[in-house]
Image 1: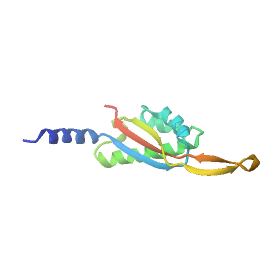
Image 2: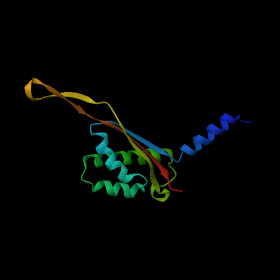
Image 3: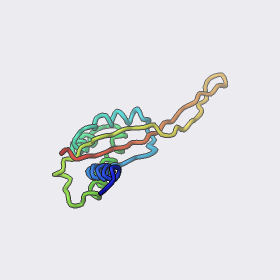
Image 4: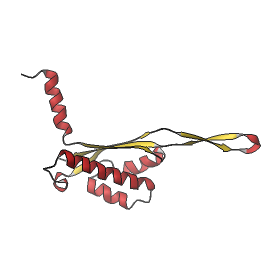
Length: 131
């Protein structure tokens, strides 16, 4: 007879089998610009999200498109016997966190200098079947 913790751990492990996670670290785009694109695909069907990203003019859309394809590949690696089209994968969660900031100096009038913060971000995406 399994312990209470073991049963709970097995349940969590079983739930995570339907999930697919992909991360993209240190993307040299400001988090604010990336969030604008991420908000569009949050909660959408995966195939619809890919179509939407393909026709968006933002550079961040290319990176997110590639990340979703990576998450789909991760899902297929976990569920080799299932088909992506039949499972109705959905972008369950997508979040953009700020990463390291490159600090640069820009010359300013009268011998001063202004600091420029070149921001970057980390994106995490979690796919789940809609069922």
